[in-house]
Length: 472
Ligand SMILES: Cc1cc2nc3c(=O)[nH]c(=O)nc-3n(C[C@H](O)[C@H](O)[C@H](O)COP(=O)(O)OP(=O)(O)OC[C@H]3O[C@@H](n4cnc5c(N)ncnc54)[C@H](O)[C@@H]3O)c2cc1C
Ligand SMILES: NC(=O)c1ccc[n+]([C@@H]2O[C@H](COP(=O)([O-])OP(=O)(O)OC[C@H]3O[C@@H](n4cnc5c(N)ncnc54)[C@H](O)[C@@H]3O)[C@@H](O)[C@H]2O)c1
Image (cartoon, rainbow, N blue to C red):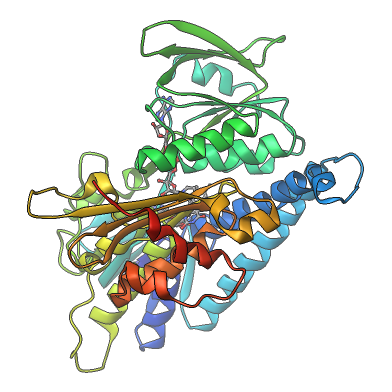
């Protein structure tokens, strides 16, 4: 059979591939979307949507346990893990089915199967060969496998070694969950399962949790986790793992002093980063360049080393977030599909680099946008100021009895413009969005100090924060 020819092929139904396939079809192009697992990719099926749904259950359990502090009595708190899981499954199914319906209705040919390159612009999915002038790779990442002696053996004991996907399918609360990794995934799941009743130990190789954050912010998150009775071991690496009838997980860890010790638990969650889904694509056949970690190398307009082939989302490295992958869709749409005369500057990855927002959905949340103090090049001619204050200075925090957290901003001393902002608080993501907008609109710290916010809102913290400004 000769290859089927398309105008465009999208590989992977992630956060950019799915809307892009619809937009390509809507522009009159014959478009195929190839997906090996399920429409909607990681975010909808095993990332953001299910985790934030489950984390909502954890927050209810947390508040229910604290109910008496608010003068409310609701008895013992029990967890029905199967109900928590069903709620998650239902929301995922509804999001996935909605996405699938929309992409099919847009006229996209959906092909279920794993694709790989067999020629420069030729792909094979099972027995089908297909070619296209334009190919868009949106194949994402998967949980990384740490180099841990004994792991393969222990994995034979079903259901004891988990990753970010399988942990969501547990039908009962683990007795003692050992989490390998103190990044987003480790912290979000670690706190969730503690709130659902598990004993939790987080083993973190780095000197601090959330290693990219400002040390003051990361320290505050660490304090909250410990306050929640989660054991967090810093500068500790997992060396080997074993399993026996008495102890399903026996993890040997090593501190930086070289001392080894053992942690016994019921389950082990691997949360030590993610690996790009490029190894099975046979990219070399098409001449597509990758970096040393296997991420696809792209230009600021997302073109790979081969003209006409683009990469979007986590697969090209950089910040691995849904909103960044979706913005990659916008970059392609504006540069390749727009029929309007181009009076605007070209939309590129460089345009968003200085103001990327993200939220780690621990509770309270940790949110950040812009630069960190440690990323700002220093020079004697440039004045940099910081402001930080505890959340307990915000009336809303006291009224709701949710005072754990803080705010921190980094400011250009001459212009007064905000360079970066972090917040830890129950709705820190929304508070951060206010500052992100100010940064995008060129409103400096004085503008926020003088802004009339509704009382008593979390945003009022942005009136008071600036009283703590100091030069660093
Ligand atoms: C547990 C967890 C929680 C997260 N929470 C958040 C959050 O709260 N907020 C946030 O912004 N981000 C979150 N993320 C990250 C977010 O999910 C990703 O950044 C986002 O999904 C973007 O991914 P993508 O578009 O690059 O591709 P993905 O969504 O990963 O989709 C890639 C698709 O390609 C398919 N595929 C792979 N190889 C092939 C092939 N050869 N042929 C055909 N199909 C293939 C895969 O099956 C998959 O469906 C979370 C991630 C995880 C794991
Ligand atoms: N709320 C969100 O937006 C959200 C939530 C979950 C995931 N994500 C995305 O998914 C990505 C992956 O998350 P992640 O938490 O797996 O990765 P990560 O890179 O954020 O964190 C992994 C952590 O594991 C530690 N580690 C690595 N090897 C180790 C070992 N052998 N022993 C002990 N610790 C070890 C690292 O020091 C690091 O702190 C994130 O970078 C993020 O972009 C986002």
